[in-house]
Length: 427
Image 1: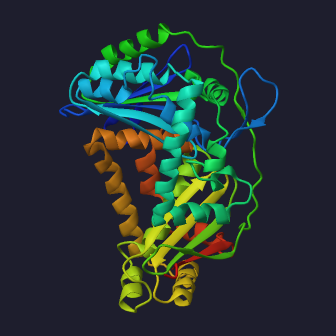
Image 2: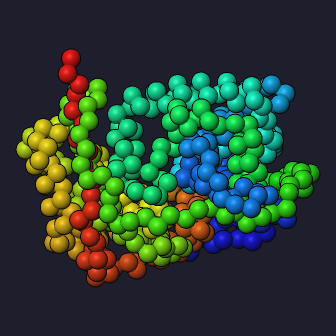
């Protein structure tokens, strides 16, 4: 077991790589009654084209299968529902699938050890049958219907589809009905056996727990199980273009006001570790300076009758692609699109505002330790997005200066964007 010391923050994370390859991280925080754990596989909806373990070539799987697999792991062979097992121990359990991971997690104030073992056991004991796979398809289709009715989610996912050409992040995590209908029990086992090996997974534990006893509990649990020999995972790589797939699209949906989505696409070199972390820092500061609390931009859009209520902003960073997405209920579509573009391209920056944003981010680093579950999320994002825990986060934020920020901005190209216009259906 080793310690990862968070520089200048007087915080530490315990880490051990087990014999089966599982990386275990523990953040101990005394005085908190709530405890929990994340059991994460580095497998999400973007990994549909890969070489299954034991086979010799890359094959394509139905889109949405990672999310389907997440659902099926909650079905146990003894027919006792996983949710009920955790409920008996006073705990809450759930999971989610993103483009790059699937995370199974629980929180509890009691019976932590029992819950931790249950988490490890149900994720590592799949039970797929032809019957339960067919039954699940109807459930997933209902979920697809619900997500299609959620206009915010629809626009967000449509922006990915319009911006990306080949990169599989363009597809919805949940998949579509046509692909879901193709999923078989055999498909699920191939995906599970490839990506759910302990060497491709991480376990993150947080709360006021005994460090050595908890690690020993996990060691014994994993040692009692047999896993196939580790094989390197081969995932198909895509060379995404810098241009967007679709520049402009108009569609009709059930909306009370017209809505506009704008997605800017940037293609960069692939980054990892602190280099990638610093790139995220740059975009955080950039977007906050232009559109955040220190800017009057959003208020002016509302005041001037250009948007109806507020401006939604999101950005995603994966592989060598960065997407910045804007969305709003619009009263003046053309002016909204023009003003967003002008604001992004504006080269005038106030150094005092830059310093305010940088210091606010420094404060946020400190505050994330106030709640152990918040820092567990930081650990998760660091490992899955940057390849490791960024223990020098405070130093990086502290030393990032205005001149470097301006140089980073000069290299951005805002010419590649997708615009989605959504108007209401005629009654």
